[in-house]
Image (cartoon, rainbow over all chains, first blue to last red; front, side, top):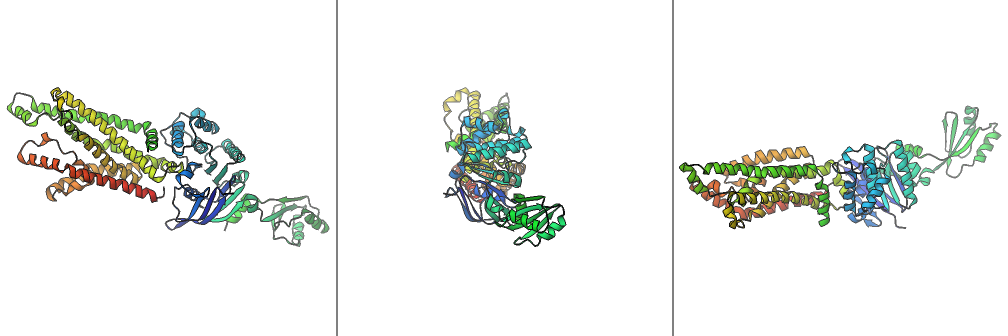
Amino acid sequence: MQPVLTLNGITKSYGSIQALKNVSFEVPEGAVFGLLGPNGSGKTTMLSIILDILKSDSGSFAWFGKPGSPETRKQIGSLLETPNFYHYLSAVDNLKITEAISGRGDSADIDRVLEIVKLTERKKSRFSTYSLGMKQRLAIGAALLGDPQVLVFDEPTNGLDPVGIAEIRELIKLLAKRGKTIIMASHLLDEVEKVCDHVAILKRGSLLTAGPVDEVLANEDIVEVSATDTAQLLSVLQSFPGYSHIKEDGKLIQLFLPVGTARLEDVNRFCFEKGITLNLLTAKKKSLETKFFELTND
Amino acid sequence: MLALLKIEWLKIKKYPAFWWMLGIVALTYPGINTITYYGYLKATTGKEVTNNIAKMLLGNPFAFPETWHSVAYFSSFFILLPSIVVIMLVTNEYTFRTHRQNIIDGWSRNQFITSKLFDVLIVAVVATLVYILVALFFGFYADPNSTSFWADQLQYIPLFLLQSFAQLSIAFLLGYLVKKAFIALGIFLFYYLIIENIAVGYARFKLNDIGRFLPFEISDRLIPAPAFFSRFGKDAKASYDHAIHLIPEHILYTILLTAGIWWICYAVHKKRDL
């Protein structure tokens, strides 16, 4: 299947600062692709390049197998960095411009997207009178105009209240269910973990890892155990065969093992034979947060 | 092309500053010409001999066909007002970051500049329309007997349009390159009102009038001071004829300069990070 987006060795510097270093990855069709990275890691620069706002120094990218062009951009609903609208125009008038430029949607569709982002009541108010969250909603609405197959969201929940964040999360899930490809940059790991099935992690312009969430996260098995006597448990586990390292976290002990080697029965039997009765034994998936810190910390 | 024009109109038609500009232009063009007209009337009515001589010598600068020339000349002082709007229209795109959004939504970079060229054209056409109305009004009002000459000297309409477009293009270039409205306006006003006037004046006497090649002066010379300014004395007559004689040459320079300005905009926009 043709990837929706392919990046090939994208490099970009601002003067002496290298914002992106030879970044390559693919976004498969129908993926909810999370682009992660600390502030200043190059997420927005990367999205700007694929939307032709910035010119890369070298490398190339392709949308639907074709080099980026106005025609490809028209098929993509995008929200980049900030909501960009004419302050003196109303939501409807602003979306009319989006519609006219992109060819996506019509006046009925403008009403539809305003309903989705809950701006119907204020649709005739000037953009300058909107709150931060409302501006963000309008930007999301503009991206949804014409129901495009591909959506690019840069920090979509910026400025939204908790209810708004939950709504956008549901919206993204819904869009994903309908087969849309969504590329989403965020530093809110929790958010990405909840909605994304693919991730790429950037750090200071370098791509650390990219792929399906399960693959990126699952490079280690974690077994979490605890017993009444934590110190004794710890000393016993140190003789357990085949683990890579042990971490003590209060009353909990985490045992890290190579992928696919963790069998809870073995751990249980091993401890019991050594005279320790476990009061907790569970296999744990690494959270994206742990992985993220692991990768991005020096 | 038509689509671009329509989109620009969507942006402009609800932009308050545009209508303020139009309102002020619609006041200042008739205003300055009315003042001049009454100045002329005052100089040419009365019983004294000098007044009659004045009347004889001047002719009526606001009757057809001279009205086309006179009104164009006096109105063109106020290119400043539309310039402010042009600068606002381009710097707004930066302030609102819509210069990025327009590209993201599917314009090419060239289309963006073309759309701005249409902005400048729209403002120039609006200014020209106001000029035409004012010139017509004065033609009919100042001397109803002159109406049979209404179609003479109509060349000042395209000249006024070209001059407006050329000078607004300079304003656009400034706004486009500087990006910040107030800095661009500051530079524009300081250069347009002060620096170039001094330079042109100085060059006229000291440097063989080389000042006529300065950006605004190139197109200022499309519409020289009207004949009635120069009917006193022999030298004045000669320099008026000379100025008229130079118009075709300046049409060429103006077109070249304006084409150069837009070429720069297209070339810069193709390459630069937005």
